[in-house]
Length: 313
Image (cartoon, rainbow, N blue to C red):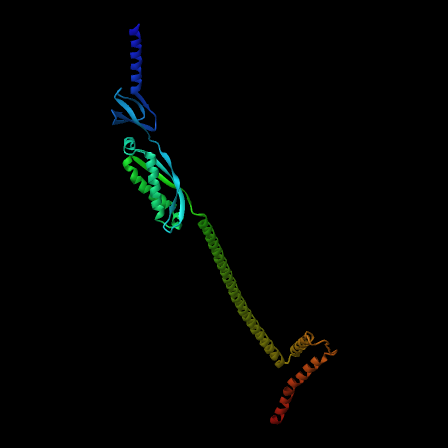
């Protein structure tokens, strides 16, 4: 009976030892193996077997990317302004053994490292640079912290500034400065718009004056051409009338004098100072003037033969 209990105890102990020697490592993690307290190897994801009563799992390290929050702190800038800032750091363990045995508390070490370097980087810049150059701050912090954590088997993938908050009085001063700058830009834009409008109006007036001058020149040219043609027509008509008079055609002189007579009365009627126009009832004077002119033309022709008669005698 006692031997049976002993056998059961030994069997249970054997099962416990066997199951303790079998380890299953989940995906995204790695286990370190220690033999009598000394690191021997690293277990990858999957099933692994340890030597019972000799080997044991030392550290369980996550190989996934981890986010570490950097607490808020106040930093004095180069121009003695106090800025409250915080950040986040993204890390990934590349070597489980180094991360387990090269630093005591990995997360705390990275937090302190990020805080000290954040004070260093922000303290070397002026307030305007700190507020406007976040990318530059992130890049400098990433370079410094990644280089410091390399011996720990850790890769710093990203570091981002979450918030940069200056004091309330500086924030109010910045708001007033921004408002004044926007008003100045608005005034500049308004002045440039007025100047452009004045230039456009001046250019339009110039083009209008040029077009009007060209129109007047063209009109003067047309008027001169019309007067020239009218003068040519008048001269030609006068020449034709003269030739008709020389030929003894009284109809031509009657037409010419009648036309001038009518034109004179038409101008007299259209005069703005003339209210009453007296038109002669008898226009026979024109015919009489033509008959007189005919007599003047016939007189030399009649005296010509009488002058030649004595000579023939």
